[in-house]
Length: 539
Ligand code: AMP
Image 1 (cartoon, rainbow, N blue to C red):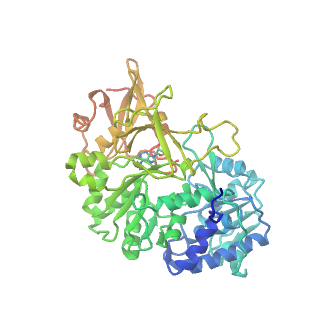
Image 2 (cartoon, rainbow, N blue to C red; image 1 turned 45 degrees about the vertical axis):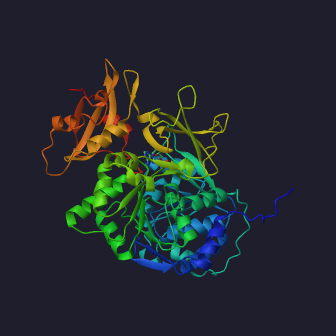
Image 3 (cartoon, protein in one colour; image 1 turned 120 degrees about the vertical axis):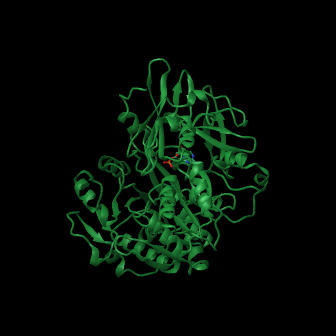
């Protein structure tokens, strides 16, 4: 017997067509390099997407071509997402914060044919262009008036590129398994690795990510992705926003600027915003200094790194609920979400705090298990901590052009994270495998020590790394940026950890710094810190 359902392909084109027809009046508001307040409707956006698709066809883009973007979050980047993927090419978003050498490596590895760039990154590309033999042309994402003088070969101005093109386009019928977009991750050892998403994986991820117990999105929402569009498709918001019909607010280059974020939230009535903890630390800091409030903001999806409880409590004071999400580039990115459950109302404040900082529960579609060093599955008892393995339709099965098998023999992908899972299915990320500190043969979770240290009133930011120790092999070192204007005392900070974490986890020493290095995606760069403190002797 066969099923009698239609065989409709799950494509990004279907999201675009639905949003164009049903949600055409929803707005997209952007900050761009050439306009701090650009606004138009989905209808306008998709009309320009069709013009862009015509322009791309005119200059000879072919199905399967990789087309790179080096850009912040704004409406032109949004247009590129749809024009590239829906006409059968692969939208390759690149992180412009990476080192120039890494960007060149990534463009060459992906064999990108064209590069669309914000004006800001033109000098960088000028410097690199001789090393990018496969690139046939560049389009600068601006208008004629702001088009910079450039030595880039075959350079076009975006607005001129699309200006005279017809606003109708015959979208091809795409196979749902065809590649739609790609993103390189440097969260692995060695060179950055390419993750290739499909139309199907993108649509399925968007559906599930919108669920009430995931990102909780609806047509009534105003969504502000503060996570960059070059980092796992802004966690999918450029797709699930149009899918549900929400208004979108793109903050452009001013991602971590508390004042800009506050202005956008209040002017545009943002109800849901997404980003890494660093961004929300900046927002809270600005709100505390200015006395301003963010009345409309109810739901902040925070992920990419563990969210300190102290930050959640600061946001509570603003009436904002921080909902932790966990995932990774290889997972499109969503794996787990932590949204409030009715049963949590019966917990004491302390028990609730324990629960809310967890990475959350698995969303439908992804499977997971934790295993020990011998690949034995560990129980979900909140205590056993092991390597976290996942599988599912939006989890990558191989890295681009890397022959080495990525999955184990049963098809599981190793996330490189260590986790414990409680009886309710709530996951706690105990560490990244390469960040774990091994002391006397036992693991220390740097994340938990950092979270505990962050609760001290004098601590602005904290990081913990393992430094060599003759007796224990490694011991933790706490590195702290003190809050501005305070005379921080290391004994007081180390003392405050007593009772919050295991005694033997308490760092031997605390070093004060004025800056903690971050990776291009906003995470603390443990690798850089380890180098910086390689010769540190514990007190
Ligand atoms: P990326 O691929 O750059 O998005 O990084 C994914 C990695 O970020 C994961 O494997 C985790 O190590 C880390 N990560 C993401 N979300 C969380 C979270 N909620 N808590 C702790 N670590 C996280």
